[in-house]
Image (tube, rainbow, N blue to C red):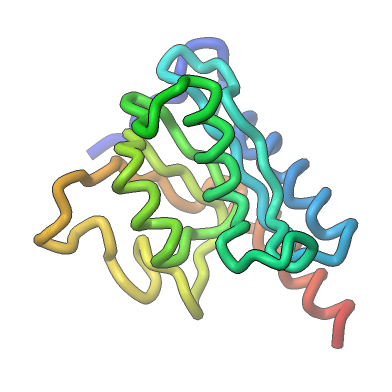
Length: 159
């Protein structure tokens, strides 16, 4: 099966992932784990951009994906995001996977796999759980090395 093409106005998924990487770098600059997320509407318009910030917000749910979902839903005045695309630098965790299902995001694009807590393909194939009523398309490995290096460098500098 061929991966879905990026929406109109975008050359490739790498171009969108670079926006998410910019957000991830913002998180790292303030000592948050460098994860960034972008949500596009079906026409390719950027609805939301967010950086990880659970430490600064004292909120364990402040993952980049959750914050981007909140922004996009507010912008559309809808708790569902049909046809929308999440692009994130790190494979979503189980919490974020659940939120993506509830929001009815159409496609999830991620960069680096998360061998510790990744719930899309690494530790759990979460979207394949039989009781879920929504299964987004998944594209993984977009700028994987760059996304992974940002995380490795961040954690290496903290040791």
